[in-house]
Image 1 (cartoon, rainbow, N blue to C red):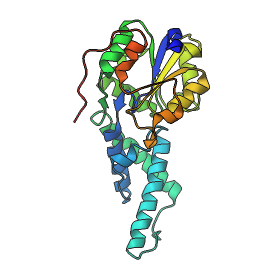
Image 2: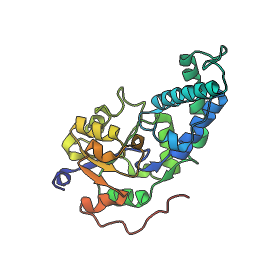
Image 3: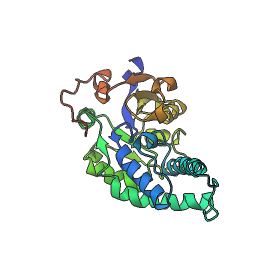
Image 4: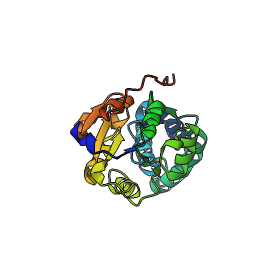
Length: 253
């Protein structure tokens, strides 16, 4: 754990790292697809699309839904494309607006802290380590969600997807955090669950912790070669020389 001895601040990803946001995201995606009379995807599929922000999420959803509908139409002996279909780029624009509307309703009730997250953040914060949040989620959704989950109080810096020109896996968000915390990149630890997070950390020159329980497009996170790979969030505490969290929040059913 030599690299961890230099750490003076920690940044965290949000979806799949601190928060199981798949239920709320799935609800918003499926409601938007349904409103355009397209096939709905379901949570198992949606979690493989999470990680690059809402624009890419909806591009992936629409690409899948159009292919799925074409397959269903072909099975019924119909042409793959309906003459009344609106162009795909217009469909995407509408779908993206619908997603925002539905996610505003579903974000808080469809998001849950992963086990031990609140206790671990509290222990790190209590130790005096500055904590930051770096997410590709659209910025307007971030602060209300952190407040609803009662973890906003732990973060000195919060960077949402609209706060930078280049989202993860670009290093810009992490370099911005390091600047705001007056740290060298090597003094900042980034904790995430996807290859985007690990790639961003490497590009920024930050140490990385990968968490295996997140989404990561259905791929093993070990393939991205984070500096450290943990199965549970509170493994951060002993790694940083702090007592292991004794209490665990129960994960939602």
